[in-house]
Image 1 (cartoon, rainbow, N blue to C red):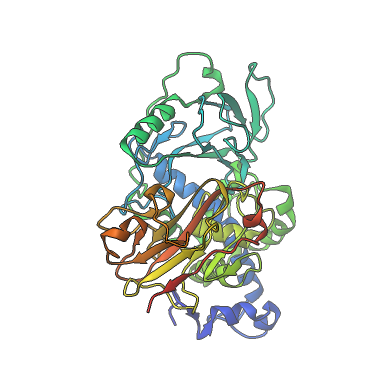
Image 2: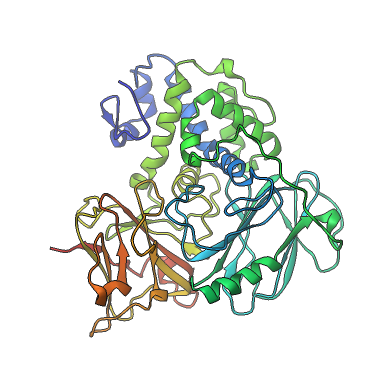
Amino acid sequence: MKTTRRSAALGGVSLLAAAAMSRSALAQGSFLGIEEGLEEFWLATDAYIYGYPLVTMEMTRRVLTNVAAPAGTKAPMGQIIKMRHYPDASFRDVTAPNADTLYTTSFFEVDKEPWVLSIPEMKDRYFLMPMLDGWTNVFQVPGTRTTGTGAQTYAITGPNWKGTLPAGVKQYKSPTNIVWLLGRIYCDGTPADYAAVHKLQDEFKLMPLSAYGKPYTPPPGKVDPSVDIRTPVREQVNRMDAVAYFTLLCELMKANPPSEADAPQLAKFARIGIVPGQSFDASKLKADFKKRVPDVGYDRIMLQFKINKEIKKENGWAYTTKTGIYGTDYLMRGLVTAIGLGANRPQDALYPVSKTDTDGRKYSGANKYVMRFPKGHLPPVEAFWSVTMYDPAMFFVSNPLNRYSISPRQNLKSNPDGSTDLYIQHESPGKDKESNWLPAPSGDFVLMLRMYWPNETDPSILNGSWTIPAARKMS
């Protein structure tokens, strides 16, 4: 039987049933035609899951920095990408993009020297500048919630850097040499507000420490024609066989050391040729694992959406408060990488996702749905909330309004009783209701509720006492 990462079953055994079987039981029989070496097979899938964030981060970096000068969604290493407008339905660089904030981002490496980030006075503008290490952990997050809106300057240093910083420059130590600054600045999408945010974006500065305080012009980027800039990153990663995947993982770990907490897991991986600081020894991996390990590893990641106890489920929605900092929860880290690369810490944002209605049926544009917020029950947040429409691959959906999310900035109309209805359907619900309409495709779709900066005086979102309304199918 040919296995694929899109299959719902493997070898005639459902993923859920396969996951429920103990590895010791499987080791006594066969799985996917593998008669010998099942323990090594499962160990290899563990290694695949462990490395998924670092490999995905590297492939994302390659795609987003493979240009000579900043343009649109891309910029060379060490230069700031300034998204001037919200992404549209053609955007494929990152899964689960948002249409609430303008990304202000950059990839840079701190192996040779620190990099200095200068943030301008933001006044009353909500923003956050999370910094992710190579393993997708948010190691620092300056912004409105944490450091305020005044002008501020930071030096991001490598894991082994020692030195003295200029006065007024605060040190942020990165655990890895690769850093992804994944900044977000709120914008209501109007021409006037776009212009205001553009002005702020242009005042952000990023430069190596050796250039700080001096006139600095970043060098042009180097374009590598071998880099695939068209295929979505997740698809590129999923296409890799086990040898290519582990070879890249081992090379990346040389510059991006694993956490000390990972040592017990990494000690096991030596059995299949994966040792931090060393190149991959492919001779220790069975040849018939080459295709099967990535298939099963990825399916194990995606299965977490259904079975992980840290995924809370209510009214057809599923979410976790375990984002941004993962510790040794490698499955959760892999899942967030796959469906929402670059997720924030829960204190900054939560991302409930809904793939089915309350009856467990996939959402379809052939039906009409209503999401009703009772009076006084809109999400209790300090910053903003929105509901975003995605296709099953977690990309925006083309629609006549070019509306990819719905939020209070659409001037939502309330019902006479004070409740608020969101109309989620393919066709317009009527001109009088279009302010509350989230356009859906004709086929299957996925919803994501974004809640930025959960209310600190009303922690009901974080503790689970606030309930997300269902998107109910209309009869």
